[in-house]
Length: 90
Image: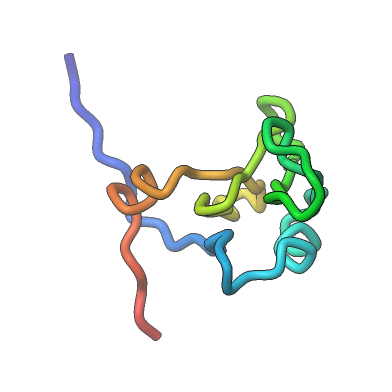
């Protein structure tokens, strides 16, 4: 079977963590801030729902939200993000 390598592409991404404001991140990616469905209590963690081509996806605290090469947005788990992307200086 032939093998393929992912082309080097620069993307924009935001880490959904304590230093980010969920409302600002949701505005950036066109998502919605909603209470965490499994931890829905007052003051509990919030998640961002993003409508993608594959349906509605959820970015939870600690996840990254990526803006892809076609302008699409989707969440990415931190371990996958670290294995796939490196920061570009400049």
